[in-house]
Amino acid sequence: MSNSALIKSSIAKKYWMAITGLFLCTFLVGHLLGNLQLILNTGEEGRRAFNEYAYFMGHNIFIKVLSYVTYASIIFHAVDGIMLTIQNKKARPVNYVYTKPSANSSLPSRWMAVLGSLILVFIVTHMANFWWKMKISEEIPLHTYKLKIDEHLGQSPNIDYYYTHVPSVNPIPKDTAQIEEKGTELFLKSSNLKLAEGYRDLHTVVMDFFNPDVNNLALLYLLIYAGSMAVLGFHLWHGFASGFQSLGLNHPKYNQLIKRIGQGFAVIVPLLFALIPILIFIK
Ligand code: HEM
Image 1 (cartoon, rainbow, N blue to C red):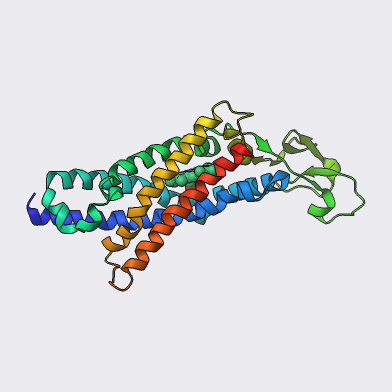
Image 2: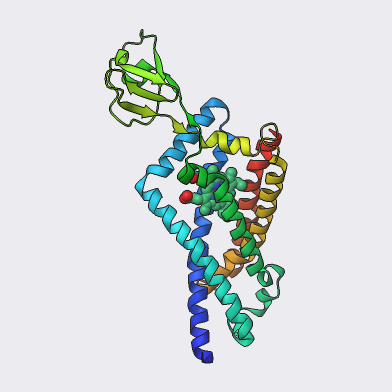
Protein backbone atom coordinates (compact mmCIF):
# COMPACT_ATOMS: atom_id res chain seq x y z
CA MET A 1 0.00 0.00 0.00
CA SER A 2 1.29 3.51 -0.80
CA ASN A 3 2.13 5.81 2.06
CA SER A 4 -0.83 8.11 1.36
CA ALA A 5 -3.29 5.17 1.19
CA LEU A 6 -1.87 3.92 4.48
CA ILE A 7 -2.34 7.35 6.01
CA LYS A 8 -5.95 7.53 4.74
CA SER A 9 -6.88 4.12 6.08
CA SER A 10 -5.11 4.97 9.31
CA ILE A 11 -7.19 8.14 9.69
CA ALA A 12 -10.43 6.27 8.92
CA LYS A 13 -9.57 3.61 11.51
CA LYS A 14 -8.78 6.22 14.15
CA TYR A 15 -12.06 7.97 13.34
CA TRP A 16 -14.11 4.80 13.81
CA MET A 17 -12.18 3.88 16.93
CA ALA A 18 -13.06 7.29 18.34
CA ILE A 19 -16.79 7.00 17.45
CA THR A 20 -17.12 3.48 18.89
CA GLY A 21 -14.91 4.31 21.89
CA LEU A 22 -16.91 7.39 22.87
CA PHE A 23 -20.16 5.48 22.36
CA LEU A 24 -18.83 2.75 24.68
CA CYS A 25 -18.11 5.49 27.26
CA THR A 26 -21.82 6.37 27.25
CA PHE A 27 -22.62 2.66 27.61
CA LEU A 28 -20.33 2.55 30.66
CA VAL A 29 -22.22 5.41 32.31
CA GLY A 30 -25.61 3.73 31.73
CA HIS A 31 -24.31 0.33 32.84
CA LEU A 32 -22.76 1.85 35.95
CA LEU A 33 -25.96 3.67 36.94
CA GLY A 34 -27.95 0.44 36.52
CA ASN A 35 -25.48 -1.61 38.53
CA LEU A 36 -25.12 0.92 41.33
CA GLN A 37 -28.63 -0.13 42.32
CA LEU A 38 -27.01 -3.34 43.60
CA ILE A 39 -25.32 -1.47 46.43
CA LEU A 40 -27.62 1.54 46.87
CA ASN A 41 -30.97 -0.24 47.01
CA THR A 42 -30.70 -3.08 49.50
CA GLY A 43 -32.91 -5.87 50.88
CA GLU A 44 -35.94 -7.49 49.25
CA GLU A 45 -37.04 -4.15 47.80
CA GLY A 46 -33.64 -3.75 46.12
CA ARG A 47 -33.79 -7.28 44.77
CA ARG A 48 -37.22 -6.70 43.30
CA ALA A 49 -36.25 -3.30 41.82
CA PHE A 50 -33.09 -4.68 40.22
CA ASN A 51 -34.84 -7.72 38.71
CA GLU A 52 -37.61 -5.52 37.35
CA TYR A 53 -34.96 -3.20 35.92
CA ALA A 54 -33.14 -6.16 34.28
CA TYR A 55 -36.48 -7.36 32.87
CA PHE A 56 -37.15 -3.91 31.40
CA MET A 57 -33.64 -3.74 29.91
CA GLY A 58 -34.13 -7.12 28.26
CA HIS A 59 -37.58 -6.38 26.84
CA ASN A 60 -37.60 -2.74 25.78
CA ILE A 61 -37.06 -2.58 22.02
CA PHE A 62 -35.02 0.64 22.14
CA ILE A 63 -32.66 -0.83 24.77
CA LYS A 64 -32.41 -4.05 22.77
CA VAL A 65 -31.27 -2.12 19.70
CA LEU A 66 -28.77 -0.20 21.87
CA SER A 67 -27.45 -3.53 23.15
CA TYR A 68 -26.76 -4.75 19.62
CA VAL A 69 -25.03 -1.44 18.82
CA THR A 70 -22.93 -1.98 21.97
CA TYR A 71 -21.89 -5.53 20.97
CA ALA A 72 -21.03 -4.31 17.44
CA SER A 73 -19.05 -1.36 18.85
CA ILE A 74 -17.02 -3.61 21.15
CA ILE A 75 -16.11 -5.92 18.26
CA PHE A 76 -15.43 -3.04 15.86
CA HIS A 77 -13.34 -1.10 18.40
CA ALA A 78 -11.26 -4.19 19.21
CA VAL A 79 -10.69 -5.32 15.61
CA ASP A 80 -9.93 -1.78 14.43
CA GLY A 81 -7.53 -1.28 17.34
CA ILE A 82 -5.63 -4.47 16.55
CA MET A 83 -5.42 -3.56 12.84
CA LEU A 84 -4.26 -0.04 13.63
CA THR A 85 -1.56 -1.32 15.96
CA ILE A 86 -0.29 -3.78 13.33
CA GLN A 87 -0.42 -1.05 10.67
CA ASN A 88 1.47 1.39 12.86
CA LYS A 89 4.11 -1.21 13.65
CA LYS A 90 4.60 -1.90 9.93
CA ALA A 91 4.84 1.78 8.98
CA ARG A 92 6.36 3.51 11.98
CA PRO A 93 6.47 7.04 10.46
CA VAL A 94 2.67 7.09 9.97
CA ASN A 95 2.35 6.63 13.67
CA TYR A 96 4.38 9.74 14.42
CA VAL A 97 2.74 11.94 11.80
CA TYR A 98 -0.76 11.30 13.04
CA THR A 99 -0.36 10.98 16.76
CA LYS A 100 0.89 13.71 18.99
CA PRO A 101 4.40 12.77 20.09
CA SER A 102 3.75 14.15 23.56
CA ALA A 103 0.64 12.01 24.01
CA ASN A 104 2.40 9.10 22.35
CA SER A 105 5.14 9.04 24.92
CA SER A 106 2.79 8.58 27.89
CA LEU A 107 2.55 5.11 29.38
CA PRO A 108 -1.17 4.49 28.65
CA SER A 109 -0.76 5.55 25.02
CA ARG A 110 2.01 3.06 24.33
CA TRP A 111 0.07 0.37 26.14
CA MET A 112 -3.38 1.09 24.68
CA ALA A 113 -3.45 -2.11 22.61
CA VAL A 114 -2.33 -4.27 25.54
CA LEU A 115 -4.84 -2.63 27.91
CA GLY A 116 -7.60 -2.90 25.31
CA SER A 117 -6.91 -6.62 24.83
CA LEU A 118 -7.09 -7.18 28.59
CA ILE A 119 -10.44 -5.32 28.69
CA LEU A 120 -11.71 -7.52 25.86
CA VAL A 121 -10.76 -10.64 27.86
CA PHE A 122 -12.57 -9.13 30.85
CA ILE A 123 -15.72 -8.37 28.81
CA VAL A 124 -15.85 -11.92 27.40
CA THR A 125 -15.44 -13.49 30.88
CA HIS A 126 -17.84 -10.99 32.39
CA MET A 127 -20.54 -11.74 29.82
CA ALA A 128 -20.04 -15.47 30.45
CA ASN A 129 -20.59 -14.80 34.17
CA PHE A 130 -23.88 -12.91 33.91
CA TRP A 131 -25.16 -12.11 30.43
CA TRP A 132 -24.89 -15.75 29.25
CA LYS A 133 -26.96 -16.98 32.20
CA MET A 134 -29.54 -14.26 31.77
CA LYS A 135 -29.95 -14.25 28.00
CA ILE A 136 -28.73 -17.53 26.56
CA SER A 137 -28.53 -20.50 28.93
CA GLU A 138 -31.45 -19.33 31.08
CA GLU A 139 -29.88 -21.25 34.00
CA ILE A 140 -31.23 -18.67 36.34
CA PRO A 141 -33.58 -18.88 39.32
CA LEU A 142 -36.88 -17.05 39.05
CA HIS A 143 -37.92 -14.49 41.61
CA THR A 144 -41.48 -13.90 42.67
CA TYR A 145 -42.69 -10.95 44.61
CA LYS A 146 -45.82 -11.13 46.66
CA LEU A 147 -48.31 -8.29 46.69
CA LYS A 148 -51.65 -7.98 48.36
CA ILE A 149 -54.16 -8.71 45.63
CA ASP A 150 -56.01 -5.43 46.15
CA GLU A 151 -52.82 -3.43 45.59
CA HIS A 152 -52.47 -4.92 42.15
CA LEU A 153 -56.04 -5.31 40.95
CA GLY A 154 -57.76 -2.63 42.98
CA GLN A 155 -60.08 -5.17 44.61
CA SER A 156 -61.55 -5.05 48.07
CA PRO A 157 -58.84 -4.30 50.64
CA ASN A 158 -60.37 -7.05 52.81
CA ILE A 159 -59.28 -9.86 50.55
CA ASP A 160 -56.66 -11.71 52.49
CA TYR A 161 -54.84 -13.18 49.53
CA TYR A 162 -51.41 -12.69 48.16
CA TYR A 163 -50.15 -13.72 44.78
CA THR A 164 -46.97 -13.29 42.84
CA HIS A 165 -46.69 -9.97 41.08
CA VAL A 166 -44.84 -10.88 37.92
CA PRO A 167 -44.87 -9.95 34.23
CA SER A 168 -48.04 -11.24 32.71
CA VAL A 169 -47.88 -13.91 30.03
CA ASN A 170 -51.68 -14.12 29.74
CA PRO A 171 -54.34 -11.89 31.33
CA ILE A 172 -54.76 -12.62 35.04
CA PRO A 173 -58.43 -13.09 36.04
CA LYS A 174 -59.73 -10.83 38.79
CA ASP A 175 -61.30 -13.82 40.52
CA THR A 176 -58.32 -15.12 42.44
CA ALA A 177 -60.05 -18.43 43.10
CA GLN A 178 -59.33 -19.28 39.46
CA ILE A 179 -55.59 -18.88 39.98
CA GLU A 180 -53.20 -21.57 41.08
CA GLU A 181 -49.71 -20.73 42.24
CA LYS A 182 -47.01 -23.33 41.46
CA GLY A 183 -43.61 -22.23 42.67
CA THR A 184 -42.75 -19.08 40.77
CA GLU A 185 -45.50 -19.48 38.19
CA LEU A 186 -49.23 -18.74 38.11
CA PHE A 187 -51.69 -20.97 36.26
CA LEU A 188 -55.37 -20.89 35.42
CA LYS A 189 -56.88 -23.70 37.50
CA SER A 190 -59.43 -24.77 34.91
CA SER A 191 -57.14 -25.19 31.90
CA ASN A 192 -53.67 -25.16 33.42
CA LEU A 193 -52.90 -22.18 31.16
CA LYS A 194 -49.75 -20.36 32.29
CA LEU A 195 -50.64 -16.83 33.33
CA ALA A 196 -47.40 -15.43 34.63
CA GLU A 197 -43.90 -16.28 35.72
CA GLY A 198 -41.30 -14.89 38.07
CA TYR A 199 -38.60 -12.41 37.17
CA ARG A 200 -35.19 -13.84 36.34
CA ASP A 201 -33.29 -13.38 39.57
CA LEU A 202 -30.20 -11.64 38.19
CA HIS A 203 -29.84 -9.81 41.50
CA THR A 204 -29.20 -13.05 43.42
CA VAL A 205 -26.85 -14.31 40.69
CA VAL A 206 -24.65 -11.18 40.99
CA MET A 207 -24.84 -10.98 44.80
CA ASP A 208 -23.94 -14.68 45.19
CA PHE A 209 -21.12 -14.36 42.67
CA PHE A 210 -19.18 -11.95 44.91
CA ASN A 211 -20.38 -13.36 48.24
CA PRO A 212 -17.61 -15.41 49.96
CA ASP A 213 -20.22 -17.26 52.07
CA VAL A 214 -21.86 -18.64 48.93
CA ASN A 215 -19.06 -18.70 46.36
CA ASN A 216 -15.61 -20.14 47.21
CA LEU A 217 -14.11 -18.23 44.31
CA ALA A 218 -15.60 -14.86 45.33
CA LEU A 219 -12.21 -13.41 46.35
CA LEU A 220 -10.66 -14.43 43.04
CA TYR A 221 -13.55 -12.86 41.11
CA LEU A 222 -13.28 -9.70 43.21
CA LEU A 223 -9.57 -9.42 42.38
CA ILE A 224 -10.21 -10.05 38.67
CA TYR A 225 -12.99 -7.44 38.57
CA ALA A 226 -11.13 -4.81 40.61
CA GLY A 227 -7.92 -5.40 38.61
CA SER A 228 -9.83 -5.12 35.33
CA MET A 229 -11.31 -1.80 36.48
CA ALA A 230 -7.77 -0.49 37.06
CA VAL A 231 -6.90 -1.58 33.50
CA LEU A 232 -10.06 0.12 32.22
CA GLY A 233 -9.05 3.31 34.06
CA PHE A 234 -5.64 3.42 32.36
CA HIS A 235 -7.25 2.76 28.97
CA LEU A 236 -9.76 5.58 29.45
CA TRP A 237 -7.12 7.96 30.85
CA HIS A 238 -5.63 8.26 27.39
CA GLY A 239 -8.57 7.05 25.28
CA PHE A 240 -11.24 9.58 26.24
CA ALA A 241 -9.38 12.75 25.18
CA SER A 242 -7.73 10.92 22.30
CA GLY A 243 -11.21 10.13 20.93
CA PHE A 244 -12.09 13.83 20.80
CA GLN A 245 -8.77 14.56 19.11
CA SER A 246 -9.30 11.89 16.43
CA LEU A 247 -12.73 13.35 15.63
CA GLY A 248 -11.16 16.76 15.19
CA LEU A 249 -13.08 18.06 18.20
CA ASN A 250 -10.10 19.96 19.51
CA HIS A 251 -9.49 23.60 20.11
CA PRO A 252 -6.54 25.08 22.02
CA LYS A 253 -9.02 26.74 24.35
CA TYR A 254 -10.80 23.49 25.31
CA ASN A 255 -8.13 20.78 24.90
CA GLN A 256 -6.97 21.04 28.50
CA LEU A 257 -10.57 20.88 29.75
CA ILE A 258 -11.37 17.80 27.62
CA LYS A 259 -8.19 16.15 28.91
CA ARG A 260 -9.16 16.85 32.53
CA ILE A 261 -12.75 15.62 32.00
CA GLY A 262 -11.34 12.45 30.41
CA GLN A 263 -9.01 11.89 33.35
CA GLY A 264 -11.86 12.46 35.82
CA PHE A 265 -14.00 9.99 33.88
CA ALA A 266 -11.11 7.48 33.83
CA VAL A 267 -10.83 7.60 37.62
CA ILE A 268 -14.45 7.94 38.77
CA VAL A 269 -16.20 5.43 36.48
CA PRO A 270 -13.86 2.43 37.05
CA LEU A 271 -13.65 3.27 40.77
CA LEU A 272 -17.44 3.18 41.16
CA PHE A 273 -17.61 -0.03 39.13
CA ALA A 274 -14.96 -1.62 41.38
CA LEU A 275 -16.84 -0.51 44.48
CA ILE A 276 -19.80 -2.75 43.54
CA PRO A 277 -18.05 -6.15 43.93
CA ILE A 278 -15.97 -4.80 46.86
CA LEU A 279 -19.05 -3.74 48.86
CA ILE A 280 -20.93 -6.96 48.01
CA PHE A 281 -17.87 -8.97 49.14
CA ILE A 282 -17.42 -7.22 52.49
CA LYS A 283 -21.16 -6.40 52.92
C1 HEM B 1 -17.87 -4.39 38.09
C2 HEM B 1 -19.10 -4.11 38.00
C3 HEM B 1 -20.04 -4.71 36.98
C4 HEM B 1 -21.14 -5.44 37.27
C5 HEM B 1 -21.68 -5.81 38.65
C6 HEM B 1 -21.76 -5.80 36.01
C7 HEM B 1 -22.93 -6.54 35.88
C8 HEM B 1 -23.48 -6.95 34.69
C9 HEM B 1 -24.66 -7.76 34.57
C10 HEM B 1 -25.47 -8.28 35.74
C11 HEM B 1 -24.90 -7.96 33.24
C12 HEM B 1 -26.04 -8.78 32.60
C13 HEM B 1 -27.18 -7.85 32.23
C14 HEM B 1 -28.28 -8.57 31.49
O1 HEM B 1 -28.01 -9.50 30.73
O2 HEM B 1 -29.44 -8.15 31.66
C15 HEM B 1 -23.87 -7.25 32.51
C16 HEM B 1 -23.78 -7.17 31.13
C17 HEM B 1 -22.78 -6.55 30.45
N1 HEM B 1 -21.68 -5.91 31.00
FE1 HEM B 1 -21.37 -5.60 32.95
N2 HEM B 1 -21.03 -5.26 34.97
C18 HEM B 1 -19.94 -4.61 35.51
C19 HEM B 1 -18.93 -3.96 34.81
C20 HEM B 1 -18.82 -3.93 33.44
C21 HEM B 1 -17.78 -3.23 32.69
C22 HEM B 1 -16.68 -2.40 33.35
C23 HEM B 1 -18.01 -3.45 31.38
C24 HEM B 1 -17.23 -2.96 30.18
C25 HEM B 1 -15.96 -2.71 30.19
C26 HEM B 1 -19.19 -4.28 31.27
C27 HEM B 1 -19.73 -4.72 30.09
C28 HEM B 1 -20.91 -5.42 29.97
C29 HEM B 1 -21.54 -5.74 28.70
C30 HEM B 1 -21.04 -5.33 27.31
C31 HEM B 1 -22.73 -6.43 29.00
C32 HEM B 1 -23.81 -6.92 28.02
C33 HEM B 1 -24.82 -5.73 27.96
C34 HEM B 1 -26.06 -5.97 27.13
O3 HEM B 1 -26.46 -7.13 26.92
O4 HEM B 1 -26.63 -4.97 26.68
N3 HEM B 1 -19.66 -4.53 32.53
N4 HEM B 1 -23.02 -6.65 33.42
